[in-house]
Amino acid sequence: MGAPAAAEIMVRVDNVSRVFDEVRAVDRVSFALARGRFLTILGPSGSGKTTLLRMIAGFIVPTEGAIHIGGRSVAAVPAHLRSIGMVFQRLALFPHMTAGENIAYPLKMRRFPPREIPDRVERYLNLVRLPGYGGRRIHELSGGQQQRIAIARALVFEPDLLLLDEPLAALDRKLREDMQLEFRRIQQELGVTTINVTHDQREALVMSDEIMVMEAGRVEQMARPVETYQNPATRFVAGFIGVTNFLPGVIAGRDGADLARIRVGSRELSGRCPAGVALAGGREVDCALRAEQIRLALSAEGLRELDATLPATVTEAFFEGDRIVYGVECPELGAAPLRIFDYDPLHRSPYSKGDHVHVGWNASDLMIFPR
Image (tube, rainbow, N blue to C red; front, side):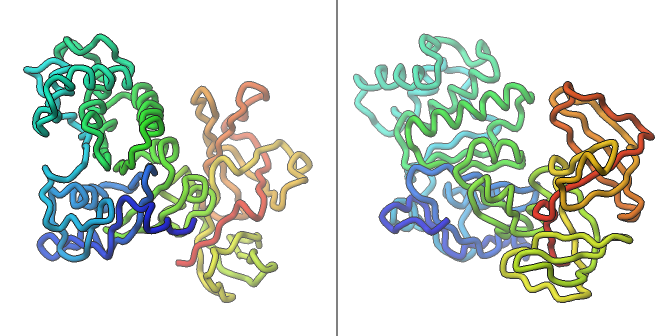
């Protein structure tokens, strides 16, 4: 997607780096985020995502580069004077205050007129769907309710920017998934520009307008969730988002404008070339194939509409409720096992360990990445 027009940009990060003891935690990162958009910075531990967020918040000073919020440089603006709301992983709610007093706290610190505070607190309790909870102590609230109070406190003074520092990481899976949808609802209702940091790929895909994937302090890709998932820019992105099988291969030649032929084991397969990358014959590559894009059948005839079919043997099968996860081995592909997801486990008989089957996929599903 194109860069937002200058008048629409809420956050601009230009060539920002941060060095700790000669280690570049963030390495020349640049991006622009339009007003009202929800960006998730996604990456593993140590990728630099939290350091980048804390530089935007003003808690860490960049070693080099510039950060602009609302069109103005914040280099000389301390954290407490930036118009930023934050929700932390530990929430940082005051246990000696009621829920309402926690929400009112940033208003009092910013010297809002006292007569306006009660109505504003109640309005934000309604926004997070906790009307009438203002008088409760923090220990009287569930984990999800505490999350909602933290959101209300971060938004009650109507900041220009909302920053989320892995606020859902400590929740159990069901509550975390519920709160992902709740964060997104609130963000869309208010239209507040939001930057979220997480290592949870589902959270990034569900909540975001855009995803920035980071590794070793650098940006691997920044794109819409669908684009990030369907067209990963690098091998790292393909492996980090979704469950992906990687097959080592060698380029055997071109197969049209967008496809190449790859020798994998004893088979020659056709796969999708990355945009803008020249792949000469004989070059070693990794072929990426997502687990849900592989089909299973008892015979090759059942997969005849697919571009590639191979005999395989089931080595493991796990029922996970909404899907069955299979492991299979294909002798023609060499030693590399394949992980396969079947998302329709209730409408056909499952396969068992030792079953002889066929697997198949389309050439466009096999992504090629140079080593």
